[in-house]
Length: 390
Image (tube, rainbow, N blue to C red; front, side, top):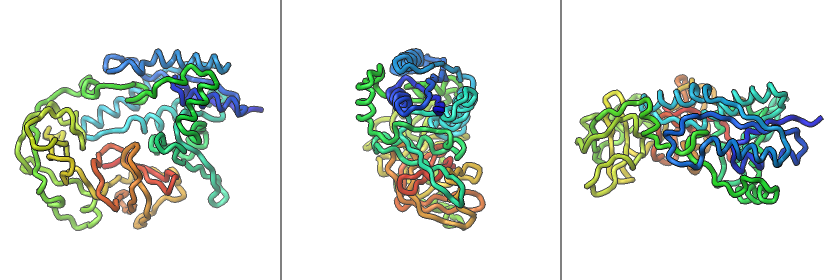
């Protein structure tokens, strides 16, 4: 009997081709559209309104001759993703909703809904790959980078568990994007030429300050300009690892007031746009935020030392291993490759597991290490684990 798979049809070309390929491979395919967002007032583009996407998903399902249904997960999305985002920004951190969306929505709530329909698997249009190996007689699932280096989305899947991976299929992971479009054209899929959606997972392009101002009040504060010659490690700490991963030391006395801002929680490290401050020799970049005192720290020029850090720290509670069999024990260290944001080239680093958490020290200083974002570490093409930067 054919295995049953529920495909998360988003209305885009990737998930459409995923459904087509699975049907060709002999699976019993069901298409399901997730409606996770109702409020169009904060979107700045009509590229990703959910109604058009839902219609496109339905047209593809009809063309492929597969059952189709829509599921409204907007309540769960609000509770698990949007509320979390607001709380993180309020605290001065910058969350990654796409990583959370995969962990909490697509491969949790959506997966459970699929299992209720008798599904053996769920499939998405992610550019990632799944493989299997055996460790001590036990099957272990591996998450590999997508074959297309320009589209690899393994980073967005960095929080998945072995259980979630066991139920996941990524049919386009072995393909290059132009190949996916060509398959869609040959199969006569309505989404073949549709542009890729951008912006928040399921929300579309949003004007982030408008989005955040739904719940976070604008609040005037000082912009402090920190000179580049400020010492990088101006504070003493007994632990060399702690010193290596410490953020740039910043206090209100670190520099001079250069202007005003509308709320420290609207800004993120490395940001250049939105400061609305002119008259400087070089552009200003955000090098730190303090939401308690409502201060933004800026540095002039894109080589300011405040933009760079040698390492980062992940508290124990936020360390996640996809490959649990490779988990570091206290006091152990291992070399890996890591990235701190989507599409960033992988960077050589050393992971140090201590009692309080994971210290990641890079061979080269990293620009824009941002609390709240995810660091993911790889062994070659395989994603081994990840965690939330502190």
